[in-house]
Image (cartoon, rainbow, N blue to C red; front, side, top):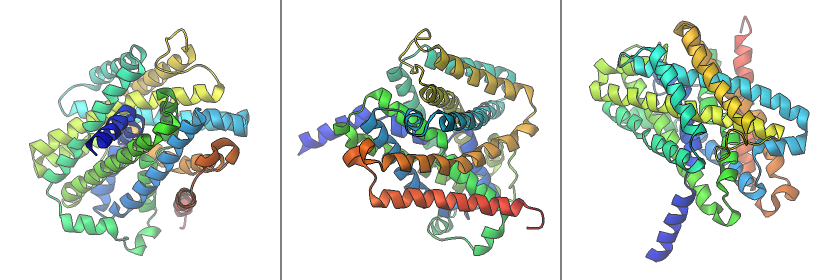
Length: 416
């Protein structure tokens, strides 16, 4: 009995990485800002989204991982082969634009978290940009993955910060399982934030990065059970962290009428006199870790995606000479994101950051629908096609997000 469980545990540890890393990097600077703003502005009233979002995240990520294992190809590679170069090119342009805004947001998080410790952004941003570039360009997949796994575990600091904020556990748990008053659906600001929460939890780039990571790691169909567990554990952990971020800000900032957060670091700074130094330090350190972590992954994900879509060499296990386009795109995204933060004032960047998460939510249904068209093809997936339940949840997620987007856009029309 113990021998069988030991084999299972060792197999899980061997494939641990892509699912856990991809899910957790989604709690980046933009994600922390969105969850913090949700808690500070609306209290516990957005917590009801966490259970359905977690379920949707697990289903979508599992679909992505399964396609990677069965086909041995990345998602953008499959989209190009099955839907043509024109659609792929348009999709790649959209992803590069959205991901660039996300990269900028990560460096905003780095600058803000280091400002809490009195370090200028003109020092922190260039140093961290050089660090993440060197780690990926000079490393290899195994060493890079180990660094990312350690960074993922550090997210537990937000759970401690949530506990230290001394929330009303009864109200928080009740809000998690109960729908809010129907009047919120007519609040365009609430809908905007809700779409941002969806977009920052199930971001489009995640699907491309996860499938590429699965393929690069060489996970086989017979090992997929452990890889699926990796996806489930990662999805559950990342949304547990998100729940605690909302709770921490609801219990401190919302309760004291401090609903306006300009950057994610404002949440940590405002929390200090309300929840104490330990909560402040945990929140601030978590923000720096999340921002640095995502500043590595997001450009990497974009480089993987575009290279696959164009059919050129990619991968951190290849040298600069073997995959020049891959490394140059990765470098340009990091340099461009860092320079944007250094050149523009923070006042112009905050709306930029929230908008990036909303754009994630708007683009998400397009990606999910393309995935559904691929994963339900017998000639492509064989016996590993989607189950009926997975189809219902994935299609339902797409339809709901589209409906939320239409409601939001309708609310933005003058007179509505």
